[in-house]
Image 1: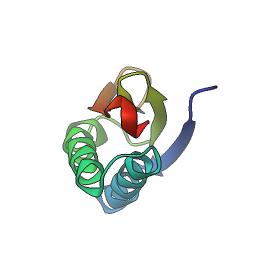
Image 2 (image 1 turned 30 degrees about the vertical axis):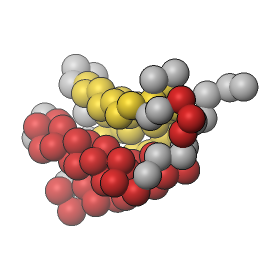
Image 3 (image 1 turned 135 degrees about the vertical axis):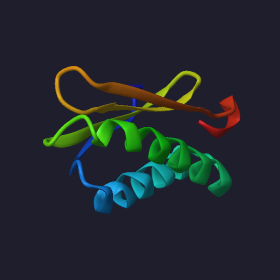
Image 4 (image 1 turned 135 degrees about the horizontal axis):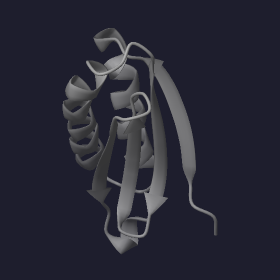
Length: 94
């Protein structure tokens, strides 16, 4: 089965951070995680955005995927700034 994945692009503006956080929370839930796990993943993503958003005037690109150990999002802010946020999911949840 191919990995479940999608991308999201938003402006590097704090007003849009909630869009990425909502997508992260919902992705965890769709992959079988509990609501609390989605909230934790969204919070971790939001924490990583504070640093990345200040490094670019361009958009932030989010690449969400389901990995063997859980969910992952790679956030890219320009050519030299990348952050990876992971959240484990139990095998029974995937």
